[in-house]
Structures are given as structure tokens and as C-alpha cells.
Amino acid sequence: MHQHNEHCDCGEHDQGHSHSVNHHEHNEHCGCGHTHAPVPTPDGLSPIQVDILLALRQRQCLPVACFTLLKTDDDARHSVALAPVYLSATNDSMEQVKQLGQELSQLEEMDLLTLDYDILLQNYSYEEYRNSELYAYFVQTVAEAAMRPEATYDTPSLDLGSMALTDAGEEMVDKISKQLDI
Image (cartoon, rainbow, N blue to C red; front, side):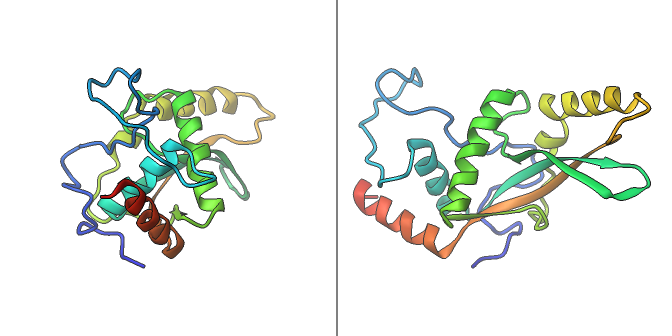
């Protein structure tokens, strides 16, 4: 297993860059301007999941977040509103985030990656998460709900963390790499 830090090959952590995992299936109709051959995928993996695993092999770790709800003065009230959240841009839509979140959750269930909301990437600012349209909408929605006297939750929270390949994930990437001859 590796350490999540500024040396995780993620790039320059304080430059406000974003990480990109392709949110679409690459083919001759994807419109990205490149020619793509069909990517063979192992049974049970989607093309997006293959992209995620390959990106994690290249970068060693990527940021991830969790939108949570809290109640002031009641530590027992804590609920996950949206997780996992991986953003490639500050204007990613709810639909994009939910779709990618499903893919990440499935990879975690397959024990191919870990989603650690308590392990931050060192020297990484997470600015795209704090400044995202989706998080701003979440904060606004919680504030509106908190104005009701019977509100169950009144405080939005952003739990920041990281994702990384497991040993099984590393083996899967080796298998994919052999299939792709990379």
C-alpha cells in the first residue's frame, strides 16, 4: 500500500488543477476529437471503471469527498448526503457526480480501490470541491431546511479524503494493461 501525499504522482497539488477521469465511453461517436479503438474490459467492469483504475495507477491517488449533514449540539445526528464525490470540474452536474459515484462504489465493493474520507492528500487544496457549484447548492439547501423548527439537520459538512488502488486493484490494472498492451 502507498502513502497519500504530495509525492503520490498526482501532480502539482496547490495549483488549482483538476483531475480528469473520462466521464464518457470513448468511441468514434464521443466527439473528443481522437480516434478510439474499442477498449476491451474485463468481465464486470465498465469502460468508466477501467478509466478510473488506469488513472489511479498513473497518479497513485486521487481526491474524493463526502457531503454530510450534521445537527448543531447533537453529535449523534450525522448523515451522509452524497458520497463518494469525485469532481473533474467545479461545474460537474449532480447527474455526473452520482454516475461516477456509483462506479467508484462498485469498484470499492469489488475491493479494487479504497475510498478514505479520513486520509487527506497532503499539500492538496481541494479547492474544486470547496468551490464547486454542487457543494454551494448543497450548502444552500441545508440552510433553507435548517430554517424550519423541526429540521433534523442544520449544518452541511464537506469530508475530504483520497482514493487509491488496493492490491487486488493493482492486479486488475496489470491484467487490463496486458490486454491493452501498455
